[in-house]
Image (cartoon, rainbow, N blue to C red):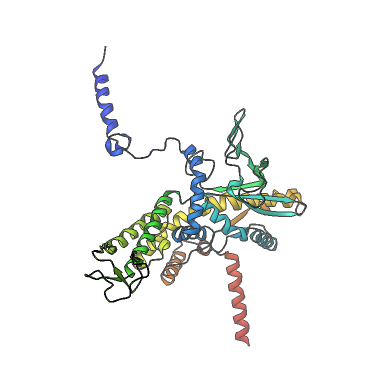
Length: 441
């Protein structure tokens, strides 16, 4: 027997489902793409998208600006290492040594993260020292995918065990395209020797996708439209005159050497003689130029949104910016930039690098194994580069008021500027000593 509630459920359920338009059908969704398997789609798109992003970042000024804007936001003038060792002299040595090791590589790593979607850093350590080498992303063999049995597998050159932990990377002897490249068997390098930095978009994503992916097509179209408008303006500058003799002659001018051929090429200031009966019709290339400029500008707004950048950052156009809008836009951008700084640069690069560097010091005999495991050597802080202010006077006064009200500490304010509080206090003390000596003199 069918109950009344079952009948109502059968009637209401399909109607309720249809209320969510995103899951519906119909002609309005024709041509709308779907992404049923994002992990596989990301792997398939990674290579072509990376190659296009690399080409555009070299040839397109907007794409090049996007890469540099994000790279500078991630690493700025450099990260500060702050060892928490109880002996401040030892801490300074540790800080300086690691900063010297990492600083030269940070810009290239950041550009790789943005342009290619990922960066690989290989750690080479041994009796001769500890050094870092940046590997091109295609050197981690993207074509190597196989089942190893018992739950282990290799996906796009990254090896996983049965518990989904990365155990190794399969690296080509040389990067594809390098001079005299060796295309032999891949090298299986343990995961402890490689740092893989990328921002996963989907759970289970194995390789990174270029940050330019959402706007690659628009960037190419924008470049083509900009070139078309430039050619339009060049064509308008080619003002020329045409002479037609109604009697079929040369209108009093010397006849051209090749009387059977009419020269109709456009050159500035040129005068062309046309055969009798000829006429010239011109297109109107100047029509709607102002509307074209507005459309191009609106496209640049969409590109900036897709890249997570402010329009002013991407274009350099500050004509419509004011203090309030600039501050609001910068706050939104900095919030995302700080998230990526912590998760990518600190979480995936600096912290694991510090641990492996301290372990190497222990193996090299520079410190004892007991010291290597102690909080003195394990504890560390990383200070991201500070941000410049839109209006320094207003923002410094606000920080002072926040400290006085107990809403912020001096350490928090100093760290937000990319400085170490101990260094600032030492510099202030040194300045005070100098001022006292000058006053006594």
